Amino acid sequence: AQSVTQPDIHITVSEGASLELRCNYSYGATPYLFWYVQSPGQGLQLLLKYFSGDTLVQGIKGFEAEFKRSQSSFNLRKPSVHWSDAAEYFCAVGPNAGNNRKLIWGLGTSLAVNP
Amino acid sequence: ETGVTQSPTHLIKTRGQQVTLRCSSQSGHNTVSWYQQALGQGPQFIFQYYREEENGRGNFPPRFSGLQFPNYSSELNVNALELDDSALYLCASSLAGGNTGELFFGEGSRLTVL
Image (cartoon, rainbow over all chains, first blue to last red; front, side):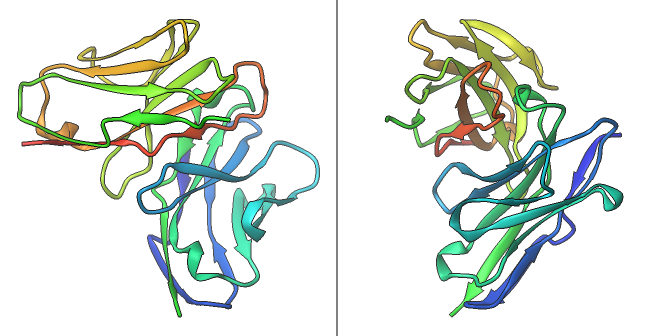
């Protein structure tokens, strides 16, 4: 079955610390992978996406993610977290770039940032 | 560039009632998707509209219906509301054929069913 797993429901980090949010997927075909962020009271915003090519992708707000096919993972990282990064983070996978209606979403990881 | 806007932002209904949620897509986008996000869950795909026709549907009953208008704005209608329909309803617009896969979301309409 196709699925996306975000193992960490909630993570708390100190401001300035590094961050890694995990995403594992089960997908029959070559997946297209996305990370979205949902800040309180706001809609979801795309952080970054992977379609092909370099497995380390850069996104907005200083985030990056690495696609590891052997581990079926697409973990999100940031070297130094800012208080404004506190939000809900969602990983999603789909069959191809244009078919966004078939995205499968994880349950999300809630990030809290301590001052 | 105008982003995706949704209305109303919050509403309360009782079981059995009907609700209509509205969405204006981002300028230049011709495709609108609707998602239901229950508390503590990821978004669940309801359906997508392209050129005023339904273009894919998730696992939702027929009492969830929609419309897309010539200006690409959209409505989500839910009939015979149930308690489990309480959720954040998200609208997302995109450009068909744009091949980026990116969805542009509104801030959502939070529906509470009592």
